[in-house]
Image (cartoon, each protein chain N blue to C red):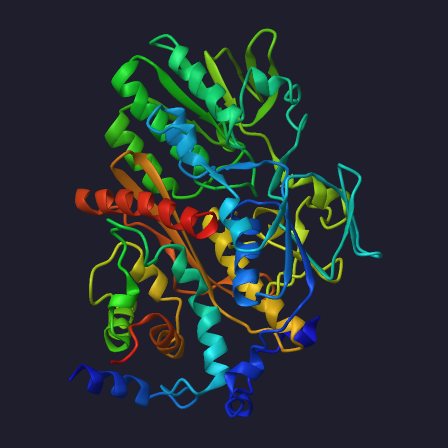
Amino acid sequence: MTSRRRILGGIAAAALLPSKQLYPSDVSAKIIVIGGGFAGATVARFLKRYAPRLQVTLVEPNPIFTACPFSNLVITGQRNLSQQQFSYRFLEAEGITVLHERAMGINTETRQVALQNRDTLTYDKIVAAPGISLQWNAIQGYDQSASQVFPHAWLAGPQTMLLRQQIMDMRDGGLIIIGAPPNPFRCPPGPYERASLVANYLTKYKPKSKVLILDPKDNFSKKSLFLDAWKTLYGGMVEWVGASDGGNIVEVRTATKTIKTDFDTFQPDVANIIPPQSAGTIAQQSGFADASGWCPIDPLTFESNIHNDVHILGDAAIANAMPKSAFSANAQAKVCALQLKQILSNQEPISTTLANTCYSLVAPDYGISIAGVYRPGKYLDPVPGAGGISPRDAKENTRKLEARYARDWFRAITSQTFG
Amino acid sequence: MSKHLFQFTIGALTTLSYASVNAGEEIQKRFIAQSCSGCHVTKIEEYSIPNLKTLSREVFASRMNSFKNDQIPSTVMGRIAKGYSDEEIILLANYLGKEPQ
């Protein structure tokens, strides 16, 4: 695999070839994409776009995709769930075979995928983008049935609506606990954006209430910006307790509606428990994940370090500094589509630079961001001197502009992936 | 005038040329531009994030360099532009900027 890491140094050698020879249009192979989220749907689309003769099959159980970014505004009643939902009809119209089936197992020896309906698909290359799975019982008492009482709302859909309903039904003066997950997890700023937008809702409708974030970490994404905003926008309504101050949740009891940390026991009116996470189930079952629960990859091609002809994208992959975001998933997918085209036409992969931007809303018209630029090294390593968070002393206009960009980003990423 | 500026910028480069007949560059610029279209799209109405296809290659490159050197204010672009080398900015300009008329 290391031989592939050579970057294309021979520009001069390649210069005389007409570009058509480097991009043969007749690359044909069977590609199966597992998972139709921001990574999977994007890679399927761009494979078909860049190499139209590829046979691309997308395996995704849900006929409708429900996007997580912006679902925190659904929780506070400022968006409808339907605004988060997208079908696969445009992918189908582009010649992608979309199977609404669950992949049960991937055999990398025979290159076959077993589906729940007992069909078997064969592949030349597989792209796995299975997202995350939630670690049930990692917090004592927090299993799938407990999530019906204390929703995680970390996979958008019914869980989002359940948390919304609980917050809408809560009395004024109630306590909402948000249990943040340990690293690494999907959408690093997400729990803190959620706390902000919930506080924004409570300020208007239930001003005597409180949001308590219990966190098994001492640091989190855009921490200084969130802490500043909570202080200036929401007074004492949002309280954050980190690991050093006893924020680690050790047990939940749904029968008594109690949440236990190392030092305290709480009885919240609403508890949103976001549990520890791992790569999606199919990645675990197929042996793509290592002991960490996530999938190690070659950062140049996204090929699995464990199995040949398996490429892994998005939240499930170990990209280290490049966060588990929809933006990252979409960017990785587009680059992976091009790399697969290189590989399938017996060309060297190309070392390139990737970027990520994650916006968070701390109020509907107050946006903050974190950005990063990455190059393949040991992992997808951050380019020194680049990236970082919005300035702490930014003016109101900048916050407004970032909120607007956040909304436009969502329209862009969803139209590119599904529209 | 702007064309002059652009030629000056690329004059400093030895490995990459402006001419798009260079097949290696053709591929590289397509790769490197993939992250940009996460935000910068061309087909959405009432969209606040700049449509890069309205910028000439010269303007694109000079704006990226200004972001990189904190010569013009920005929200995220200053932080992002600092991650790209001069050569990469030329690649991006050639791929994302408006075709010369």
